Length: 121
Image (cartoon, rainbow, N blue to C red; front, top):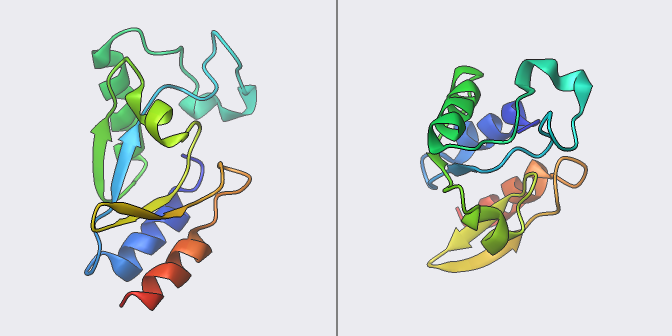
């Protein structure tokens, strides 16, 4: 997730009224597929075991991501269900999706989420 700081800001502002969940899924730019070499700190091969995926998620935690963090199965159900590769923000209220953000990082817009949550406070 390239926007950890912006995501954490949302949690700081709205964590008292909302739950925040990050689902760690497959690598968006693994070294063995479509690598972005300017992100060496986070560069890794595509996960072949759940243990590798859990370890990769722990790097996100160590980088300071707040909120709940879970790991998707190797079947990659998260991106299939939510079209979330590489990253996307959702707001779910009473079991219904009320906001589906653009594909990140280019269309990742925490300000839209903030405005929406302010309306529900």
